[in-house]
Length: 255
Image (cartoon, rainbow, N blue to C red; front, side, top):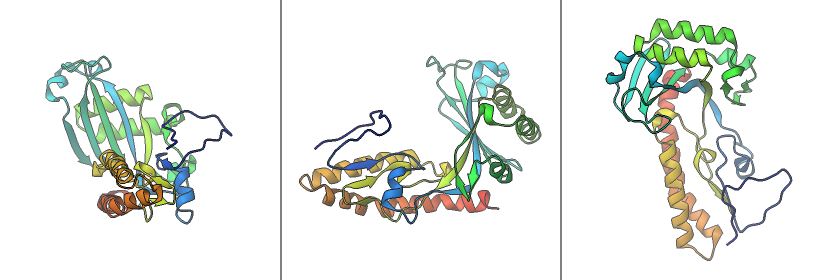
């Protein structure tokens, strides 16, 4: 079988193959073909500020409080904040050598996102990166962080805000009613987009891959049967996973 595996392409290039697997994210072009009546993921009602900070920049008294590969959760009027300790730039795992990653779930920016063009008709168009974040919003984030998070977590956020190293990513969700049609199928966020609070998105993408490979092995002489088998294996499962994340979306993002 002919296939193309993640190769960079130029505009107007044409490739031929026996089948196409769309793994092109929550704004999937492949989905627009497979399901033209429902082509776009829905904005879940909140965004997540994400980033990471070099632990060496934090007060030394904070280092020993955080364990490698551990996640810490806090809730306040400002939303939900998750921080996690990761190996540093050079792979360092000792206190002071690591990265501290953060995810701040924020449902108070919907009007601003519309003003900035990030949201159009309830559909997220892009994320907010560093220089695109207005100074006034950065100042507001700084004040909100200081007022709502403990000193250790606020120190992390203040560094990222000052350096403009955080990203405001709108959270999206997509409940599929189809995963394949003929010789075309979708996997990962293209097929099913869910709240990161489910903790299932990456694992589900891997499970999609395993399922599609298993289906092709089951029907090596018929790609249409193989992709149909993949859909029968995965459609119900991923729908339930996305629906599981909607409980958080309803209680948080759509208040």
